[in-house]
Image (cartoon, rainbow, N blue to C red; front, side, top):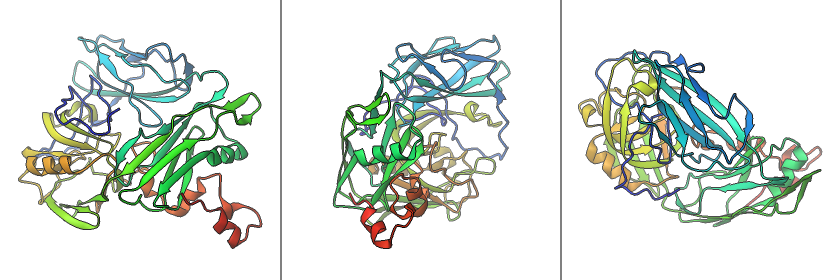
Length: 416
């Protein structure tokens, strides 16, 4: 997956509930409007579609493609979005009649997928179904997929490790953490956090330094994790950071300020989510840049219809928050919040922002009345956890050891 998106590449159809990689199907909903309706509740599409992986939490053969089929004559597929725990998207194609979606890339072995399916019935009402499944691991090796791909990122980009087998035992988790080696130049204080039994994230106490070099490698190969399970090899990661770029979008003043290495370089009028679609408060990490996205009302069930071509779209969440060009709402930018959750800019300001940021840069929304950005599961919200809470998610915790002294704790706190 490229981390330096080609601005000439056009996305056919993409959803405000889809993310990161080119899928040939999707719908998005972030257009503005003058009315202020509440979204209708999508119907449960569990009976309307079938998924080849079966019911939730099944283990399937990764050699078989994933298929989603609309079974009823009344329903069609509008969006299928399948990702693994590291945020990698499974590409796929939608049939001409919008009745079937089929993966076009291989499924990874020993990973868990989350599949979000959007449908529409013959009356135009939206439906939703979400399912999860795992693929069978290869043999009895604990494989680990390290992320992100090697490259240059913003200072907010976390490191990730996705395991092929579940690990719940605290001693086994500690062994794995100690075998995942992170080195940073300049050095920083950092820690792993177990998102769940198969996924870990690593971040520093505060953002990575600008122009740092970070390496991540695994020493798990051949290590006995438990009876019958031994560590496997993993491809190392070499990550560099660019300038420290932070955007602060204030939903009260309706201004977004962009800072580069601590200095404000741009201040722009914005509009954010209106009632019923409030933008999430908190720190978000830029996930992707898409020069063109089609955004429609269907995928979020908005009662005010729209179908808009959107340019210079910078993605912030899995659920579909973007910073993007919104020429239809220029009169409201800096005045009122009229979007469906995205941050709208003039076309010129959106193009400047698109050209000025990279994956891993920070966008923080403040003073919205929306829910808080989740730490996990909707992109990279890792920075919304305090350092104290972050470290509690690590199996290597010096200050949790019974009888540990302050000196012990200081020695055990990892610096990378």
